[in-house]
Length: 297
Image 1 (cartoon, rainbow, N blue to C red):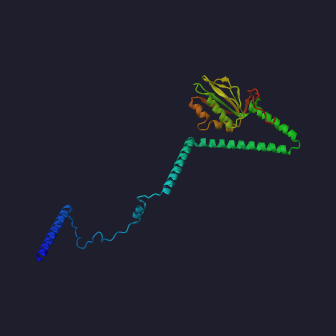
Image 2 (tube, rainbow, N blue to C red; image 1 turned 135 degrees about the vertical axis):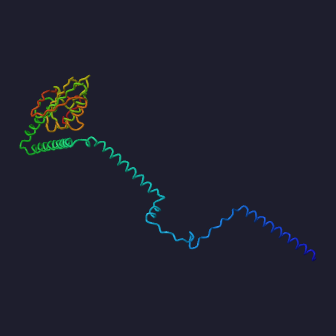
């Protein structure tokens, strides 16, 4: 019995020895695979480690930079930024457009700007005078003891005025004479039409060009090196006889970039003369409308 126990004790010792050998081999293998430890240098005498050193307080600028960078945006902030960008782009386009529109006036001389302002004031005054005239006619109709006679008088006066505008009666009064010399043959129909429109805007009441009366339906066409007015061929020099306020008509033709400058660029010579009496005696035959009828019939 004691021999059996001794044999068992021997086997147990052998197993423990084998197990210890395997543990030792495993430890050696792990030690070879792991990198060698780097010793941490000890701080010098009187010097504190990085963890023990007190942290320096941040300045205001450093706190501001740390708060702004890196930027952190929310979806709402991005939408607002896009809207502001679109608004700024629209304002920039509008400013550029206004700059292009005002470029002609920006380079104008002081006397030219004064002339333009005077013309605008004159147009405003004409509209105000017309308004006062209509109010006066209404008042006369309302206060006249014989309203029928007053209505007939105003109708006759209106007929005379419309006859002048329609070109069926002659007219005379103060105005200007504009002569365009075109030795190069460069003046075209659209340039003369621009002159007519500028004169009308300045308050011209009656116009004739080389003996042809200008009315509401007048048209200009090119005819070789000359121009036709309502089918009537006219040749240079082109002579405009215009009834209206001379102080308004002449400045309207001489504004920067206006009729006179445009014609002079085409090597034409333009002269404008004011007069107290201009006669416009070229007549037009009254034409009955083909389709239009008075609404009072």
